[in-house]
Length: 331
Image (tube, rainbow, N blue to C red; front, top):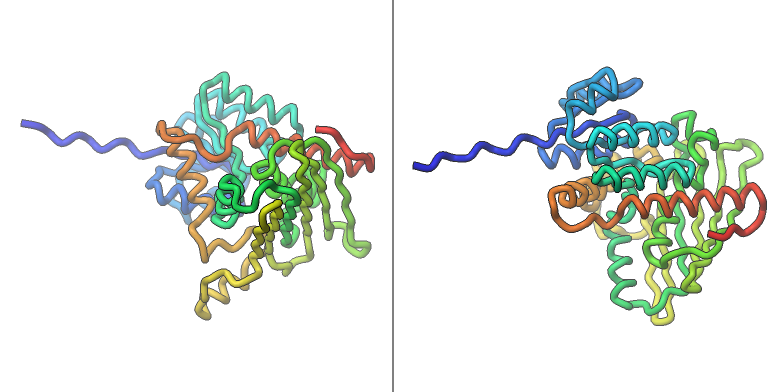
């Protein structure tokens, strides 16, 4: 007589850092019925009350209790935490950028390869349906060979002090615009040269506009524009791809094809301007996590990998060098 097999043990996930981005990741882990653990310099108890996570007082204690690590800390802390998690034999998803220093980002990718673990940089924009559709259209040749790509990303400066300190966050280029730099690389391929400019408001140096121009090895040109505005600035993102056979455009401020009732519209209007509103689309953060876990389980590779994260850091760092020197930087 056969006996029913025991159910598999739950996935044990350790979330390191419990600020705003951890809340964006949370629904994805809950959808997988993960057993949650967390640790943080502050806010862990509040996060645990919301999520049911078990709080650990140290990173070492958390690493001993979990299978997968999700790094949601401020950028300067990424390398040490990723390094410790990989050395402990854990697969890791890490918020972008992997590191501020390209050499350190490469070191993390190399360590993951040596340890036989997956390291996924959380370039979540690849999982937004609009950008995924653009990628499919480019690959299908719908607009022909790419010639000019334009990306814009607008939002308010995040409300944590470290974001305004370029030595900690990498500024608007490394923190916000790295999303569109990654899109340019994903869609148009490797870059030959990078040139960047930045303008700051005279009345408030935290308000700034960044421009990063990429010349791709294919000959295509990408222009990425980022804006950090004052509190209350709405989040908006656009893409405009021109090829020799057509053009593809998207603007999040346009008709989303979804009509919000009064409650949903009020919720959307009350967003903090730091993260995009995803209430009218399949959750890209959850899709990112699900695809990563599918890869870990032996399924197809995720659409982003550690090497992609390294390349994005390399190009963003070249843009910062261009800002410092006023020169175009070879990549």
